[in-house]
Amino acid sequence: MPITEERMQTQDFVELENAFGAHNYHPLDVVIERAEGVWVYDVDGKRYLDCLAAYSAVNQGHCHPEILKTLTDQAHKVTLTSRAFRNDQLPLLYKELHDLTGFDMTLPMNTGAEAVETAVKAARKWGYTVKGIPEGKAEIIVCANNFHGRTVTIVSFSTDEQYRLGFGPFTPGFKVIPFGDVRALREAITPNTCAFLVEPIQGEAGIVIPPAGFLKHAAEICQENRVLLMTDEIQSGLGRTGKLFAYMHDGIRPDVLIVGKALAGGFYPVSAVLASKEILGVFKPGDHGSTFGGNPLGCAVARTALRVLVREKMVERSAELGAYFLDKLHTLRSPDLREVRGRGLWIGIELNSPARPYCEALKREGVLCKETHDRVIRIAPPLVITREEVDWAFERIRKVIEKD
Image (cartoon, rainbow, N blue to C red):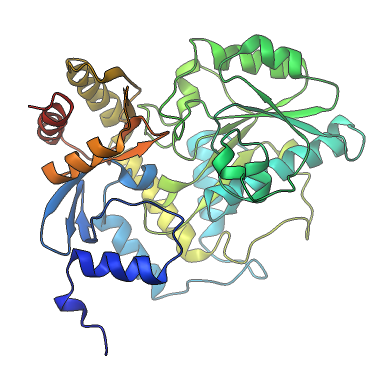
């Protein structure tokens, strides 16, 4: 019997997904059919304030009209050429990223995990061809509780056992140090170390902010030892923390910058690795690539997404409203509340018990959040949120945390 979509309700969609989809996610049982700005609407007609923003992919807000127009306009022209030919959007994206960030070169990909893989390959090749590390000996230092994606190589240096269980054998060449430990970083470096890969703020770990000065000291140590500092800003970048990039809070500049998610405003998967000519110049034709990486549709969308982010002062809005939101959340009182922490509109509410029931209660109140690392509620609304909408969300969060 054919499926009649207009008659389906939430439970119908949930049952269909459970029956025919792989169970590699544990979503809340809300079925979204449309969205605008910070609001999403389910198939039953209920409205919710989105406090996840697709893990920071929709910083510019859902269905931003200017980005939508670019998507449809470009789709009528050309969507994909592959990199076998040139297109008129990619060079413009290169130039605009250079002007915005100051980095010499960009290597475009699609997903965040692809960008991290690209950065790992670039660091290793730089280590061999520029630094002179013996072939096959390059080492990359990472931090405990990191999250950089889920490919086999990336989970090889994860410390979360669930991400690794059943997926070995793993890729060698990685050392793990405690996040925020400058001394451990210094001691882990050897002549074969080519890079230190780090999230300036750990997102999936629960919005974990390192000790003050950590990134600055890490940059100095890397420079002293000719080690590339690679910052993964896939979630933390493009305004999420109240700066264009989170590394800017420490007044440093990484050697390699990894971006994704909000780079295309949630309309299309676009990611990129940005670095100097010395680093990205190690790639020669045929060394690395992607059929969809740098495609004209993605590039056009990314150009507009960046323009919107800057022109509408979303970075500044994140700083202002993030501080306002944090101040309000710090007034929460509950024996189950362990800590509220964050930077910009990227906030973690850590509890003494599992966060999932709280997220389910918030859903019933019209606020969509998602637990991370079992006991943390992550708060990350689109950066277009208003003060009034922050107040609206806070009252519902207060009700659920304080269990009025």
